[in-house]
Each structure stands twice: as structure tokens, then as C-alpha cells.
Length: 217
Image (cartoon, rainbow, N blue to C red; front, side, top):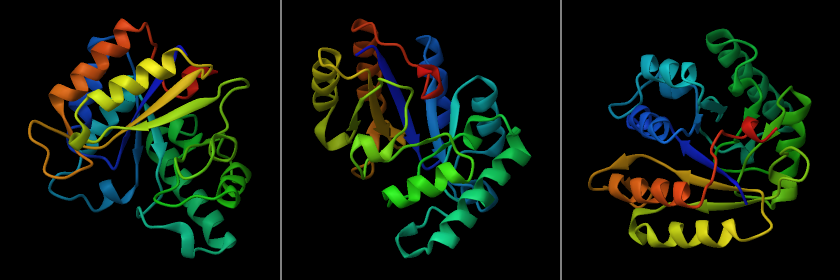
């Protein structure tokens, strides 16, 4: 394995700092954002100006739905409508060639049907940890991947071990899923800054590159 995809979800207000830290190591991240994070921002939401800066610095933005709601109750027509609306929203703000018009990570719930509809409505790649690699992602030919999630309750050791294992495996990429970063996490999905720095340093030691999904092409 030679490639790691740092995938941040949900537009947390630390995404800009995370992007800057990756840049210090010559890496790029991937950021999955629902559009309502910017149309109806919360107290800990990433400011739109920072989101634009992240995209301008060459990090990937992934479409993550409009309202970050589960699509499990959607009909196929509604899924297609959501895909088109989300894609148009990003095209209007970042341009039709932006990564958010090419990559979608359906929020919460995904199926092979959602993946098919996303591809039919213009997306190039879909990402989800709800499915097997064959159903959940369409990476460039030959790029099988391993998905790992960073949780603060585990500390960095589980992620470090996963990177070690993946680097010696036949996988061509590992997707490292993260949420908001904090000095002291408030809930399970948040990750300590010190842990994230340790994981990045280890990826550098292993000689891993990080240029997002499109960097694999």
C-alpha cells in the first residue's frame, strides 16, 4: 500500500486547521460536507470562507448530501433528486470541475442502488464504509482499499496498527475516517490533536502519499 486518504466528515470547525497540518507534511485531505452545514451553520461549523480556502489549496471536497439525513427512506426518484441538487449546489459555488461534483459520500446509509444512482447522475466515485469495497467505491482500476476509523477512545494505537498492517498488505490505499479534532474530545467520534499528529507522523515514516481519491487516478 502506498496511499492514504484522510477523510474528514461533517464540516467541523477544526477542518481548516487539519488541512493546514496536512499541508505541512506535503499531504492533501478529503472533506465530506453536507450543504446545510453552510446554509444553516451551527456554533461549531466550519465557516464558509475557510471551506473555500481548503478547496482552493487543493484538498478534495466530497458531496455529503444536502441535509445529512439518512437516505434509507428515500425512493429512487428522491435519491436521484438529492444527488442532482447537491451536485448543482457545489457546481454553483466551486465550479463544475470541483471534486464535490465528482465524489459523493452518501450520509449515514448507502446501498448498491444509491451508488448506481449517484453514478447515473454524474458522480464519478462513491465512498461509504457501509458496503464492501466492490459496492461502495469506484476507484481507479486496481486500487482496492481498507477503511479505518479514528476514535479517541482507542487512542492512536489502533490506527497506527492499522496503517502498519495495510502498508504491508496488497491494498493500494487506506481510507482513514475522522471527525472533529479537539485537545480533549467531548464524544467518541472526536479525535485528539496529539493522536492525529502521531498518525500523520507514522504515515510519513511509512512513506505513504496522500492526495485524496482523485490523486489515485
